[in-house]
Length: 155
Image 1 (cartoon, rainbow, N blue to C red):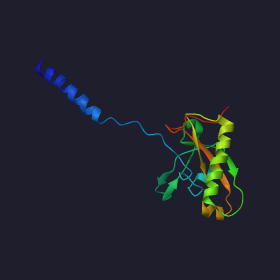
Image 2 (cartoon, rainbow, N blue to C red):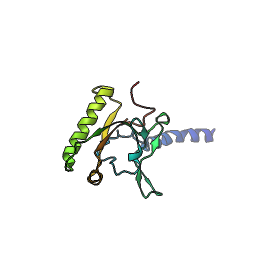
Image 3 (cartoon, helix red, strand yellow):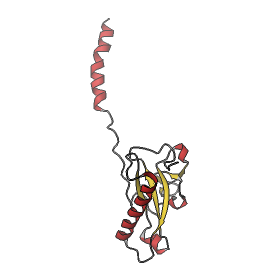
Image 4 (cartoon, one colour):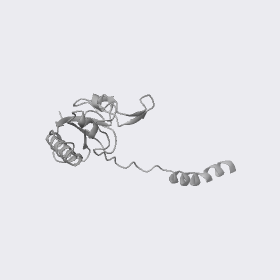
């Protein structure tokens, strides 16, 4: 009887200790035009409509890489289109404005003006890839609170 009382007597202390170590909910992820660029290994292999991982360091590649991921298995991101930036000298500010605007317009065409569960971001050429002739901006969609469960593309 004493052993049972002692065991139950510890329960409030264990519960109180457990509440001190509760992991807070994750903050929503915010991905910007610098999250992934055209120089991120693997991103140039992603085609329109395909899903892919967030960048992660790969010891084999000695670099951060993104990997194609079948949408049906859940993924971090999905490409929903490409836009072609106008030729000219590389201008980071102008390219950023163009990329956000053009990806935003395509996002609105597909999902409407606002969806609480999806966000988009552009994946842009860098000065180095621009010098090599890269003018393509990939538009990607993601869920700020977790992975996509399947393809996010409508219908």
